[in-house]
Length: 270
Image (cartoon, rainbow, N blue to C red):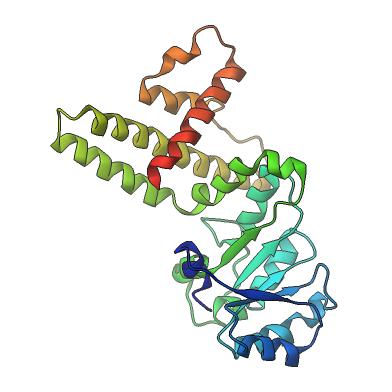
């Protein structure tokens, strides 16, 4: 697999094209033409899922990363593209954060997601990786979510944060730990102390979301009602000691305020 995800996360300008012709030869020509990525379009192009493997093989002999846009964001559509060797998936027409959260889960092996583990597949290395190494594939797999509707635009902030909840909770916790160490080393610096409080609250908020997602997936898989804490944003906002904003508000508004404040403080991680 390619390093296309790492390059994208690093902010590199990456150029590519859509492959609509269902032609392995034209796919290879495009790949040798200098593009960084090529998207095999199963939503609007001429190819179907049955045609996908030859197209992936054609792009695979070139420096370009082979991405796939499936017909929809269903588990089997995303999973098949990845199992056949796609370096990433562009998921079309997701309208809510809940739909995106579900689709992102299909991109990742457990515990980060719900992708089915089959190590014999081309996408997993055809037996070259063990179960303890599936995290390597998660780090290489690029996920692209299309914002194509008014409802998706309305939830774009929540959608943009989903990848952080699933994949980078450990990094956020480490960042908060560093801030705490800095504040401890400078006990008279109120700004450092304030930033450490906010980062600690945010880290616990993201960790709670990751746990919430994992519990929800377990309930879906095994049935039952499960258990969850309904007031996670409010609880972690209390760590920042700004509970005075709660005065005179009902529980729903408290949650909205808490989530809004914590969301804005995400800028501290950049």
